[in-house]
Length: 334
Image (cartoon, rainbow, N blue to C red; front, top):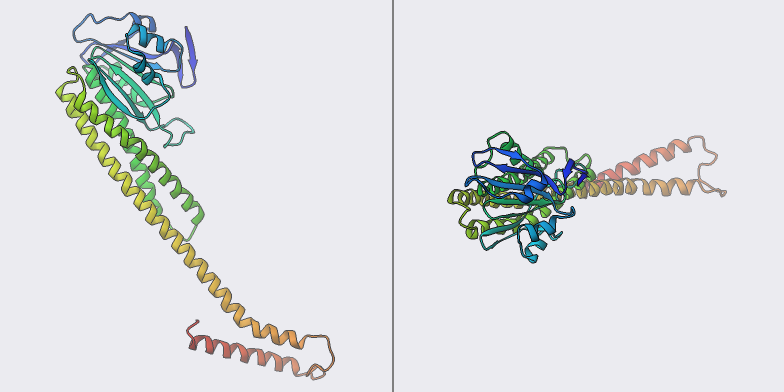
């Protein structure tokens, strides 16, 4: 049965792609039927099947075809995607998360990938498109891929963490660019962008921290087919992930400092504006009183019949302004 998926051209049942790897860096494509019936005929060969976990037949094959217990099948097909890893007999089970680079997606909306491997068969599952498996698949199709299932897992993890790193670098570059901009222009837009960066940083940290723990479990408790060089690669990935977590902390602190600086400047500008308005009101208050008093419509207004009265009033207003300026300077209001 074939089904069209929104982010893959044409799938063979639940299979996004399937490869029988030759243990020398290359591999050949096989169908869903061949993947279900595959048995290792060569000591170096291994099977990699990448599935869409919400397609029909996935859970049934995991349970009957691979003989996995029901709790493990539930972990591999569940929507509960908190990163975790555990060993089950001679197999490794893990749930990992990667950055969502799909069109229209937010970076904090991460994509999960479940995997199961017994050393000769590697099954990866996802619901939404994830570029990381495609990166490793391209190496296999070019003949430069991993030589065993353990290295395939480490390559997947390295590619996933590398994409996280690029997202963190972009976030740091955005903060640096905002620090160099004129903070007196577009304050609202800058604050909105900083809020987005802080939200993305918190989301990345929330998902990367348990992923760090999952990788430590893989490095410590993986079965014997997960060789020493694979454990070294995982250890390096753990160190990179730890550095990225530190970078996220620094980015969050930088964003908070920048946000406080923008708000402080905005508050200072508002206070300066209010202060100037207060000075202007103080200057014109006595002038308004004087002109209002002379402008009332009653008889007996002084100078009503005097042709020089207008200039006398103007001179009086100028004298009041000069007196006010002198007093404001003396009181250090200006």
